[in-house]
Length: 400
Image (cartoon, rainbow, N blue to C red):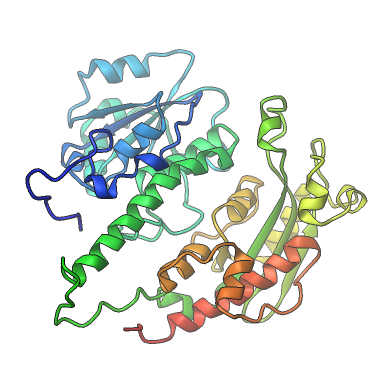
């Protein structure tokens, strides 16, 4: 559902084209990329007030946004596809698509993105041989979309700007940098929800006769499949942002992986020896000594052990996208359904509760003792407490 048409004369931001009161421009942080991003937008999507293609183009100043249906004779697309230094890939699932999160293309590329509903995107690719012929990249989203104001046909589907955050983070080897793409997106979603709630109480604060809309529920399957829930925390050897320009060969690498099966309490805790140079901040950040990190098992061994612990039918639950995303990039088995407890608890409580520890305190949950070594063990206990809270909420009737 989009915001109703604004009355004539209502101020509109010329940059984002949103009503001034819900403008998200202050949250836009331009990000330079070596990847050339070309967004091909279906004409019907252009008029969607809550679309994200324009938002993505504002965040990525080197990108191109074109609107149309027939791309066979497009000089703009032909020019983008003819750059020998940046081979083109189409971001679209299908047979032969390369998993961009686990096997990203090397070097600079041109990324062609089709923006529209899934029906519109399928039609554009099917009716444009120039698009259908491109090699494809695709991915499985590490957690459900935060697009709470637009219903997606499947939990695995995400918005255009969320997809770009995942894919560019993988291609350019720096997922944290592309988290900035989500800031205006989250601001738009929050503003839209706040607007709806205001409208439910009337323009002048008078309550309508209709009962208050129930608070969003946690999806029922969270309770129904509680036996399959596995809480996951992954710790990284991560260099400070300022050092990454000097050390491009040192991307974030998995150094500790922890998990707990919520129903049975079965635990997984493994330390992986760093392959690259150890960041000076890592030991204090993960609360594990240098000697303990150096004595960790080879990463392949840790991943093999994890594969024996997790089942394909499990549902992984993390706090934010980073941990499970790091696990996937490290070659670990990541089942198709994943949950972001941070998003679910924020939706349930209709407010932001802060960090994981702050959320546990705000909800007065009993986290219990650490479930493993270092900071990761403490965070895993906190995550398990929040997830148990979500399971209980999923099985309860909606609040009014």
